[in-house]
Amino acid sequence: MRLSALVLLLMTTKVSASDWTIADLNGTATTGAPTISFVDGNISGSTGCNRFSGQGEMSSGVLQLSTAVAMTRRACLGAEASLQETRLSTLLQGDVQMQPDPFDDSLTLVGNGVTARLVPGLPDAEISTAPYVTVTDVDATLNIRSAATTGSGVVARAPLGIILRNAGCDEHSDRTWCRITFIDASGIEGWGAAEFLSPVTAARRAEAELFDQIGQLDCGPVGETARPCDYGLARENDGTGAILIYLPNNRRLLLEFRGTEVGVSGSDGADTTKTEMRDNAIVVTADAHRVMLPLAVLQDE
Image (cartoon, rainbow, N blue to C red):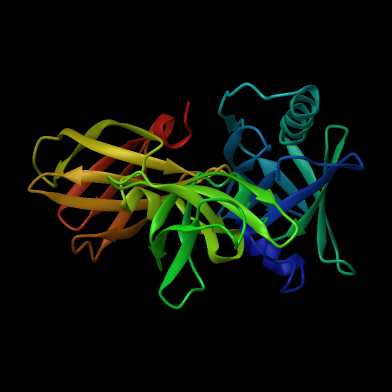
């Protein structure tokens, strides 16, 4: 039975959410907001340091991981983060017991001497650590001030929906302020009130060509020889992200991914899409174009 289907059978509607935050490991509260998601037989998530993905099925309340979980290899800062990643890597091997708690809607995973308690949903994005933010919840513009106080001068007015670079946020007596920079030619810097700023999603960043990595992959019209196409990719820290592919004839294809699940986010008229898993890549066909997505690109290996 597919993983998501059994989760629905075993748990209440609220607990059957596919996205979970790993709240603690072996009774110790986690750091870095580690997550895990179950989607159509695939698992993916973040250890709080690196991203992981794999495949699994459910049988009698046991998650059976059919293959080794793939994980990116960034160095974790600090012994606490390294230990947390080691515990999660140990847990996600072989068979893992899944124990839902109907009283607090949590889900417990037990395997290889490690116990993880999961709570439904993904953590809210932290505005203070978001590299890019957008202006929200204003009628027209947000005052950007020379200092983190309403008594300071206005250096610019940022319109609703604009994307700004975020250099970090500080708590003050009146509110939290974020130090932002306009990404246009003006390069204006200043402070904006955090309650009117929201983190920019990976899809929005990719669409705006604010990439975390760039490169080339094989693509082209169906039935023709593939050619190198440029791409830009924006990542979240939970294994999800978006990739903008520059197709021939000045067309663009925007895809979103979660682990090895890929779907069209936006494009120049891609009405029909299908995906095919290969050994080391995912082939995406969108209308009359075919794109080869290496797993190493999606998983940042």
